[in-house]
Length: 305
Image 1: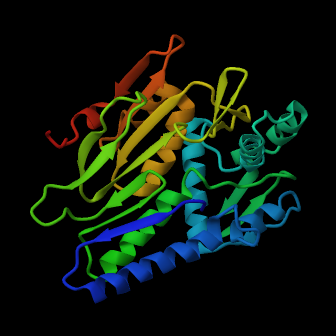
Image 2: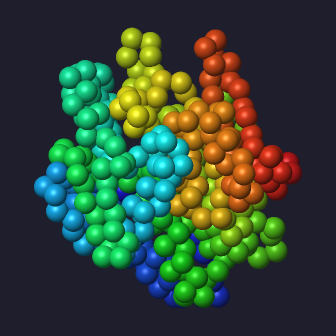
């Protein structure tokens, strides 16, 4: 998935810790082969290769679950979250490598392939079909969270409930370390000189979405690696989103969706669910940083200095 996974566990002996961690890492490898768009022969890419041919194909339970959750969030956000945006995402990924904007004709062509309604799922037969030719699936905004949840589930099955798994800025935690109220999790901000804020996390997850490290700057405009599926273009307002949730897949996908929706739309998305908390930091036109937090996020347990 283009990133490192890290496991931290408390165990009574090192042999048990190594055995459980290996099983969790093995599960990550299996899921990577299913859902990574970097792997040419992944199940995800094979499904994308069939786009537009009218064929509904059986998919693994893991892939179906992630696609089903993605579709639900697409409906909820009006397409601000959309896993069918792979063609546009690939163009902007290439643009960051070449350090130049994608050609407009290519962006226009890719935009025509995006639309979550063109992904048809049949839960009874567990099949998926892409009705639009050229559509490419990209699970970069949701699969990582699912894989984190699966990894910590493996550790728990091995009896290691005091565990933490992280990948690419997202973290899922089990029971707190011995004698502690929770795992110490540092959340960075947009201000370069700002000290990280420390939260306590136990039996929950936190995801971070933003362009602090992945962006393209051309003629004074900063283009994020996060794409708005509704327009096929990269975000140009710098935003940093943190989402707290009970599971990593929810936190991961919501942080991506909120990045696209922006502060007001993002807070509305989680306002009615007490299981979700979010903070959105964004840079205004004059360069000033504003921060908006949901009530759940404001009430979350902090680590005192």
